[in-house]
Image (spheres, rainbow, N blue to C red):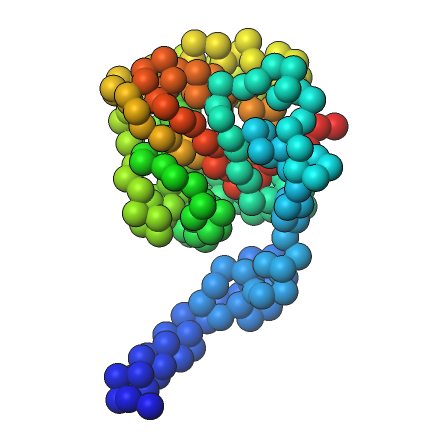
Length: 235
C-alpha cells in the first residue's frame, strides 16, 4: 500500500470521526451522512417498472393510459422515491424547516438516476418572487446545484421565471391544478435544440411541470425530461 493511499484512508477516517452525526430519522449514529444505512435502505423507492412518460408505476413499465390518451408536453419523467413516509417528512423538513443540507443529500440521489439521461441543461422549477421571499430559497435550485456538480450539466438559473403568483397546488383538488398554473411561467432564453432536465422536489399531478415544459418547448427546447425527488401516487 502506498503512502498516498494510507494517508487518504487516515484522512477519511479522521473526517468521519470528526463529523459524526445522528441520523435525522432514527437518531442513531449515521457517520458523516444525514441518514444511517438502515434508514436509507427503508426509504420508499419507486418500483423499477413505471410509465416512462410520467413515472407512475405500471405493469412491465408500459406507458400508462393517461399518457396514451393525453400525452404531456414533457417527453419523460424520472423520480427516485414514492411520496410517502418518511420521505414526505424529510422533504417537508427541507422546504419548510430550512434543513438545506438535505438539498445536497437529495441532489446526489437525483444525480444517480440522471446518469443515463442525455441532457444539455438543467432548469430548476422557478418560484414566484413573493413565494421566494416568503421561503427564503428555491428548493428546486438547491436540488439542482449538487446535481449539476455531480453530472457536469450546467444550470440555467435565469432562463425561466414564474410570473403568476398562483394558489399553492397542494391546496387545490387534483382536477383544478392544470388551470391554476396556465400561463404561470415566462421563458427569457432561446432554448433551440436544448435537451432539458426540469428539476423539482415533488410531482403530484405534474400540472406545474407540464406547464413549464410547454413553455420551454415554445422557446425551442428539443427534449424535456422531468427529474423529481418524489412522485405522489393517485389517491
